[in-house]
Image (cartoon, rainbow, N blue to C red; front, top):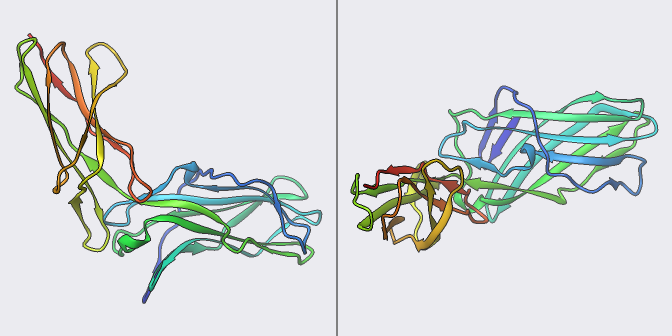
Amino acid sequence: MRATSIGAVLTGALVLSASAVTAPAAQAAETGIVIKNVSVNGGKPIVLGTTQTESFTLSVTASDNSGISGKFAFLMIQRQVGSSYWAYSGTPKCTASSATTSTCKLDFKLDSGWGVPRNTLAGPWKVVVQLQAKDGDLYNNGGKLTHPVLRRAKLTADAGPEPVAKGKTLKVTGKLTRANWDKRTYWGFPGVPVKLQFRKAGTNTYTTVKTVTTNSSGNLSTTVKASADGYWRWSFAGTSTTSAVNATGDYVDVR
């Protein structure tokens, strides 16, 4: 497996399994290779923090009347914005399920000793698939598929006073931060809506009470009336560049 940035190459161990950004069946016009499924990270966005400690999988299921060869098989996910470029790539292991069909899978375990992409690279990354059939036919999708690679978000919640008298004012605070890949640290995420949610003690479902916008430092603060024992949390839906996240619920005893 390889990760590449401008001026850097990463080689690491291969582990993990799973994936599932499914593409419709596709066939290279000049070959008989048919792509039945392309899968990335179980269909979930790839989310990176400030160090490369994540794992994910790229896989493709394809068929050809002569069968799929592991020769020249290549999988990659990449993005370039201006002069910034980053990619994870390598040679997958192809396993035949029949005489005509194989699944080629590449497992990535990222190395925490290396860097992360630039902030500008968060968003849709191109997924490149190249395969060869046993009769020599070669397929390459040219990176027409995309999959999100996002900056990791973190969110806290604190409700008080604890305990609180029923009907009294309860203050709920928190902070939303996200990975700054350029600085390798977490910075406050300003100006985005975050939901305040409540789960009554003895139940399993959170209900949205109101929506609050983070301030210039990513901080959140609001007040509510205490009505019952339960858990208060903030919930962020995410953006096209940043992952969704729920804070751990803070329990408040109402007396």
